[in-house]
Length: 113
Image (cartoon, rainbow, N blue to C red; front, side, top):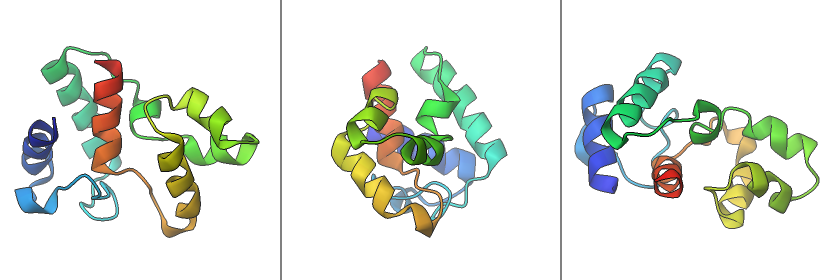
């Protein structure tokens, strides 16, 4: 799965393959923009024959959910593709900027697939 996502992101974002690792941030490191995420959703829909929920896969409202909900397990009920450990990691880095990583995309695709 990682290899396929690396190929897609390499082509879409015009970055070197070695820059795309599971821990790579899509926005912070690869400088993906909103239009890139829209295109990525379309590509994933097509390549994996799935209907991508952009709010979930791109963690669009995760800050809001973390603020509104009392526990990590409640957040995990919404973002079922993320482990509680990953949600805790996201919580700890919210002040550092966008938190979406390549591994989050992979987790979503494995979960939905």
